[in-house]
Length: 541
Ligand code: G3I
Ligand code: 9MR
Ligand code: ZN
Ligand code: CA
Figure 1 (cartoon, rainbow, N blue to C red):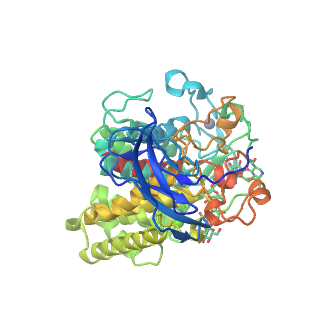
Figure 2 (figure 1 turned 120 degrees about the vertical axis):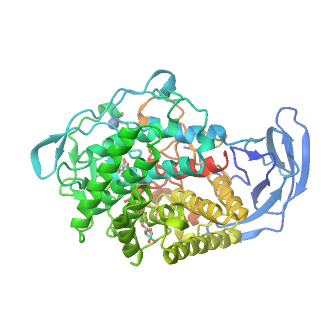
Figure 3 (figure 1 turned 180 degrees about the horizontal axis):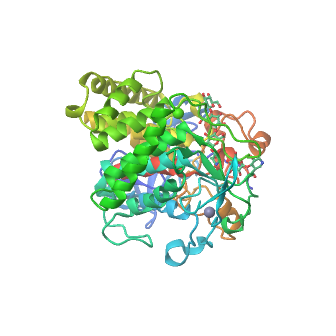
């Protein structure tokens, strides 16, 4: 692999909208720059970068180059007087249509249990995988159908809670920005009736039904082989025995939350399906009610795949109650949500372990009229205060995002997109356009306006991630990785051997390497893609 080089002129490689503000970010000294029309070679704009700010997370001095005056839809590049050049980018009326489509199509590529082929998969096809029944741990005689859903990530495990987060982001995107999902028919199931985003989520929901324990209503935490397969193993070659790990309260709460949401969203399209989702949500909820104190999940002996441990399940319970209340109006769910809301857990967080933010969004989106006014006001005020904090942090940051140095953890790009989602939720409830502008700055970061000048979305951008820790991309003999995948991004904790060897002493935002061995910085997952779909949909609606 070539030595990682810092690109000094960074842009959103997926482009900028004609009407919007346009900023490139430069590291190094103040300089003059020019915007060049790629087709004609002519200089369409010249300018000078601003004073610059010291940026702690990236360990660099960052200067702003404004070129908002360029509005003609074309392809461009920015150059400076030292012969440095930015990656190419477009200016277009709607630059992010293909990006949203690609980020959503990624879920098709994550599908398990079906062959991916032909016009839908392009060169990235593979045979049907993981078709065997799984063994329930603790009940060796019990074999259950486990087929379907999405692989979690670069590995082939399937995990209930992370799957629920991914579906929740996509369904929220559909609920808030339906116009952004009009007119795309790119899946084998596309019928012009149900939008692709709902068809794709149905794949995961259909699998989630299989994760609910018959009788109890509780939900198995995960379904995986005992160990991760080798990095070059294609999905259909991964034939080791599959195991259902024990049920957990976190998985059961997430399941109830997402099924209650699905019951509402699918109702106009398929009443019977919606009814099935609601029934599943209610049985899961009833189990939670009967099991108020449950231990957090830990991997059972012999299982070494992703643990997704979560010691705190009040957030998942809160989400379930709020979502069931929003969907059914049932007073028992409202009072449960009100009681849970009194407890101290994060209410504005959208992470796979901290799902309280989904409960808050469900309660607020249900409307003030249906609410307990004091709780509604408190949650709304809290959400806006959190967004204001993110806005303040972004304004101090050289790359204009809300992450502090300590936020560059495993999957930092999820925080980038989750924070952008929260800012957009604040825009929704306040009408304040500053929150949307700040969210867009987060998208610019993801697509290349970061200290490494790399687009963290495969297939999107001239300098995009090429070597994700993603088994199909490693094993398929196709040079280009599967497109539309969001890489985890910088992790200052240096959690794998490759980065431990190569990145010692780097500033937080540079603790990333585009190498397939780096699972802690360059893996991909469904729940890093899903908030990116939400954010992109906002700017396509
Ligand atoms: O929350 C703490 C924070 O308080 C602390 O300051 C920070 C310091 O490092 O750590 C934070 O915890 C991190 C946690 O993620 C937060 O989400 C841990 O260090 C970090 O190790 C942990 O990483 C998780 C990783 O699995 C290892 O368990 C990632 O979130 C999670 O996305 C990732 O998930 C894996 C699955 O296990 C297997 N499939 C692939 C998937 C993606 O890599
Ligand atoms: O490939 C695995 C990846 O999908 C996981 O996210 C990661 C963390 O749990 O683990 C990876 O597997 C590595 C294992 O943990 C340690 N040995 C090297 C494996 C990667 O090839
Ligand atoms: Zn599979
Ligand atoms: Ca939790």
